[in-house]
Image 1 (cartoon, helix red, strand yellow):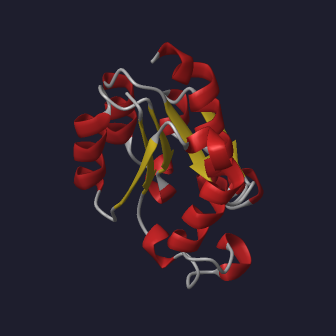
Image 2 (tube, rainbow, N blue to C red; image 1 turned 180 degrees about the vertical axis):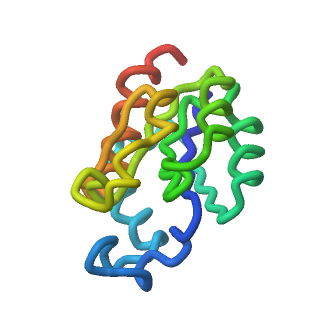
Length: 149
């Protein structure tokens, strides 16, 4: 249980290229470096893993694969947050906590982005804080659940 996962859903492989005015100009490898630098020694006892897929089934498989063993998951489901009951059910079905993260503030965007099926199953949601949302989600998991290791 010293493992943490950051998981990204569809189109997040295009970070740095896709709508930089909304999502920023950094790709996820650069964001991951920022997260690690921001968190510093807090991450040292943990192994941080990263997974991204544009395919709902692959995201489901990953939740099932790590959702009983890892300390927790910080998950940016992208557009699947607004459409996928299957991912919400997977989050409910695993025993480890999931924090939902969105780079942009979904409540300032199109109406259809304002509801998340995943939010109903996650322990918390962070929206609109850019890459720092991932770091905050990881910090919460470590502070709330890390001492139970």
